[in-house]
Length: 391
Ligand code: SF4
Ligand code: SF4
Image 1: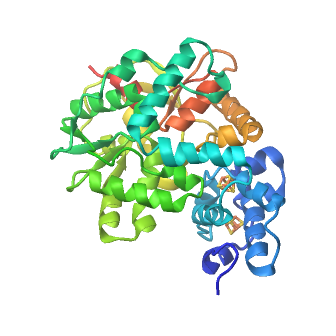
Image 2: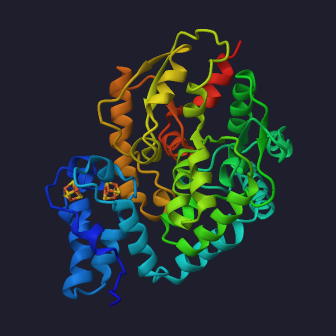
Image 3: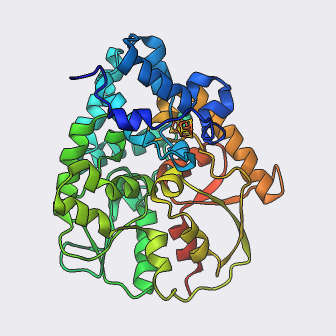
């Protein structure tokens, strides 16, 4: 029998309402509202699924306010698959009731993100807008450079490399210098690096986040076909890596399962090899763990391992609480995102031992880097930091 949200009853009933996830939930931490906690959201899903509660504005709001950081999933002793429940709920809720948002997300998700040429054209327009001071800072776009946009990434397409570097959509358009840094470090570590052929433009992580599961599946199939063979697939964006490691579950084919098993985060890949020669920089770096690296991939310790020979590393005391970036969350929930970001900035500053001086932060996810930069933090990808330290 079909239910309003079509959720797996076993997954839904696995929650025993213990509340151990609550301190790990950024929206609960800043609002104190039960309905803005994982336990409250699961209770709301159950009420709709089992008790005939309406899918009203309050329900939609509770779901929309979730950052999908999956901090709750990592903390849950009952192994509730919260990420899957939330993705399926969002998919069942369907398009946003607001026409403006519907049109904007259709343009972004269906037209621009999967077509890299179009994304680059939009990026050039954004570059022009930045020159003319027409792009508001709150959009969080990085400072775009014509020199970087003009220069393609000097990595062979296809072939039989030792390791693939997944280039993706937004990362290749806005942060291509980080791909360059990752390539330099991988080459210094002795690998012949290749980049995906046609179809490797967008992994679908942002689509999944928005509940657009069908579109995410179609993009995932293209990505799987774009990097054949058995070489590892190195990903320098924690959000993309997390989605690609779950292609097996998303597509449920033998090819997708073996593809997912080849996906590694950049630092995870580097930590498994003899390290390239680096100088000690003497600089202090505060580590910010992107949620999709820490809670989903559970591969955050490798960032410390690879940075330690060149940097003095310090830790925050917030157990990896989210920074409020979450896909397009900073745009769709600006007020909550800003409150979550304030907490994160305070934790980073406390870790560095000072509240006002500029601090250097390592973050392995483009969304988090841009979110932290919005707050004036000098956030860099570990690959950028390592490339600077190469001898
Ligand atoms: S999701 Fe897990 S940790 Fe949170 S209340 Fe339910 S059982 Fe407890
Ligand atoms: S995914 Fe993150 S924001 Fe959503 S309920 Fe879980 S901890 Fe809270």
